[in-house]
Image (cartoon, rainbow, N blue to C red; front, side, top):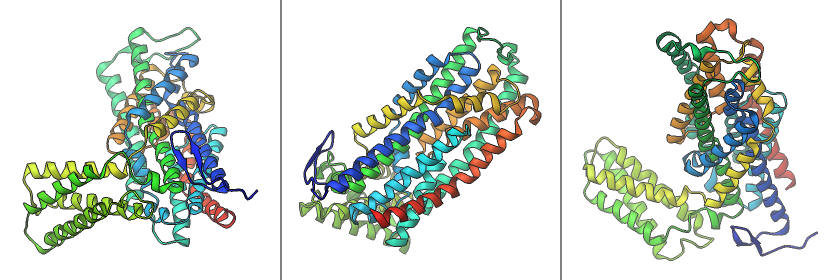
Length: 473
């Protein structure tokens, strides 16, 4: 069928011009991102409920919906720093300047790779990181993209995220060993080390409240971190298919942008540079400010043909202003530093944003996914990491450490793996209790193998899928 649907009204988006074939691709990508977040819900969030279920603090029929609700709230209140970090892995500005079908190839390769690997590891009951999966897929699609077109993978951002993913489980293991040692040798509360037996052997009320609280915190912070990855993916789809509408936050007026530019300009007029490098940086920023103001004066900042250049200009101003602010040899007063930081923050909001309805879609998908398919991963976390049943102290320790690690990472705008942090936390708590003899080596080998293979497999699969889509789409 070659009939084109030139003008389509979509809920929340409004009227958009997309041809019939691209419209089908658009809806397919939307379906895939909802599917990814749905799978993420029952794949990763199962970690949050494993300890409360296996310590008998909550029954599954209560624990799972409870966790789903707090995941939903976590996405809504977690901001967009992690989402934008995910987006920055791909050469987005170069992507926007190309035909929409190229963006569709990138999006489909990333989403299908992530879903395939997550479903495969879930089916085998192996706790695997959705973060590793997604980042590997984005790197693979970006590598394939740069082979056909100009641009490059943001290796600096990839390295930053990679370091976060590697260090977080190591931190989780070490922190759990220390906390468990404290509970065992300093606090010495015998009731914490009880191993529940039988259906009706439930924790004392205070311990039960502690376990429910830690489950709630892990669920909330999982939503605030992992949920943002879905937000980033959905924004990638919208920018790839509808760049003129979503490359910039149109709710921020040109006048407000001009205020930020003027504030930066005033700060520059009061700076003192002590070397040629600083002078060049300040002069470069001044030139960028002039060009950006000229673009706004031309009244073309929201036109389709100018949206890409204006986005680049705003990003360049924010980046250069941050560089000047961070230079130890550029002399700025404390008040000027504050003004500069605020102006950069306001400019960044123009490009780093997500509409409320995007966050709502991801929140709902993650929350519903949490309530379905959780048993396989819970079984592994609760029964197969150690050779003995979890006691109360081990469950609480793992979740306290996981909640703290994920919460801090969200604050720094870095994605981490809930799966790896919690799994390593449980392993650390068990090592602190009875040494390595209590660990199930087969399960740990399977988790480690999935950890090692996820990045290379997802990079390769995403790269191959992009090439296939590029040939046939």
